[in-house]
Length: 169
Length: 166
Image (cartoon, rainbow over all chains, first blue to last red; front, side, top):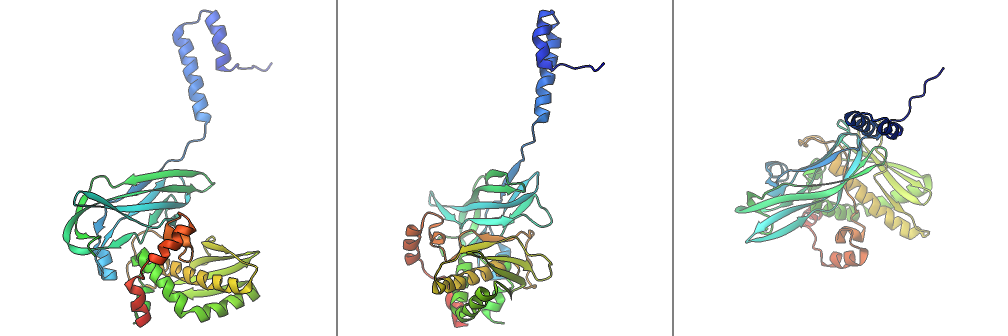
C-alpha cells in the first residue's frame, strides 16, 4: 500500500491540536523554509572592479604620450555574454571635482575566462608635472549567457595623487 | 613605417579620441575604395576584408548591413558587432556603407592589432557603443539634436592632421 507523506505545513495545525512540543513544530517550519529556498534557482552574482586611475607607463611606452588610465573588469560567478560600462575619471583640482567621461563601451566576455570582461582603451592624455588627485567610477550592466541582465557599479574609493594633470593639457 | 602603420600595431593603446581621428582619416582617404566595396557588397551580399591582424565579414541581410570580425589565425567569426539599417535610396546607402566600413576597420584595428606591441590581458572584443557616424556619439546617447550641436563645436584631434600629412 503506498504511503503518502503530507507537506510539512499541512501538518502544523494537526500537530498543534495534538499538543506536539513547540520545538518540534519550529523544526518542521524551518525545514519547510529551507526546502523552499533550495528549490529556488540561485541568483547570479556579478561585480565591477574599478582600479584607481594612474599615470600609465605602458601608454607612455607604446603611444608616446602621458596619460591617466583606468582599468575596469566585470566578473560574475556564471558565464557572461558581455558588459556595457559608462566610466569616468574624477579629477580633484583646487577643491573642485572635474569629470572626464568615457564614451559607453561594450566588452565581450574574455574568450579564456567567460565569466569576465576586460575594458581596454580607457585613458585620457595629461600634462606631466603637476600633482593632482584622481578617482575612478563606473556603472553598467552585465548580460549573462541565457539573457539575464545584472546591474553593476563600482568606484576606486579614495582619491590618489598622480603627477600628471588631464585639464592642464 | 608610416604613422598609420604604427597605429595598426597599437591596439588597446589607442584612446577613444584617437579612434575618432582614425575613423575620419579612413573615411577620407579610403572613400573611393569603400564605395567600390559597397557596390560589390550590394551586388554579392557578402564581402571580406582584412586590416591589421583582423578579418571583417560584411553582409547585407534583408534591410541591414552587419559586420562580424575575427583574428586572422582564428577559424570563427564573432557574433554581429555592429549593424545599420539601409535606406531605399542607393546613394544614401553608399554613404552609409562608407561610414560603416571606416568604423568597422577602426574597431578591428583596436582589437586585433598587428603583432609587435604588448597588449594587456583580456581578449574580449571591445567597442564604443555609439559609432562615430552617429550623432549620439557626440551627445553620449543624449539625442541627435544635442549631438549635432556638440559635433559642430568639436575640434579634430591632432592625430588626424598628422595622419593626413604623413
